[in-house]
Image (cartoon, rainbow, N blue to C red; front, side, top):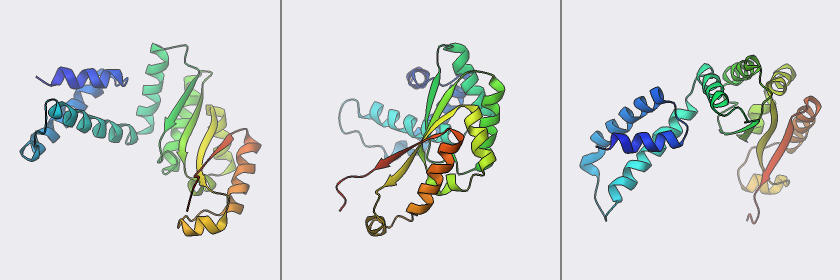
Length: 193
């Protein structure tokens, strides 16, 4: 009964058919397990609950993709929409596994497309661990920009926020990224404290 509804939601998120079938099974498994705890509050609350479960499963699904799967998905997306020239990935974990990030970069190079991409949610500490040769590979793969949460330019406020961000290290990272042609983009908080 709800399978077509879930599949429709996943289709709108550009999930490939085989993957959608797997995700539907995961969602229905969570529903079966959690249904005794569900409390209907008003008309439509079950659908909202179902959509929330689907969204959580989808988020985990995207973040857990192996490098080969990410490249295959990008290739399928480009085949379906050849006019795409830029992609944005929102993934705080993109650089957590250095080898995965580099495998994605190599795979994007192998696609042979003139494609640029950016990574939102890049962590400065993880980026600093990348070697210069790694950054060059990312640039060759099309990495045009990385969005980094710098939060503030004040060491005092960083300490109050309990952020372990080294401003001098951030400036050094900025120079390294610029040197290879990747544009660093910084996100700052306002109004703290």
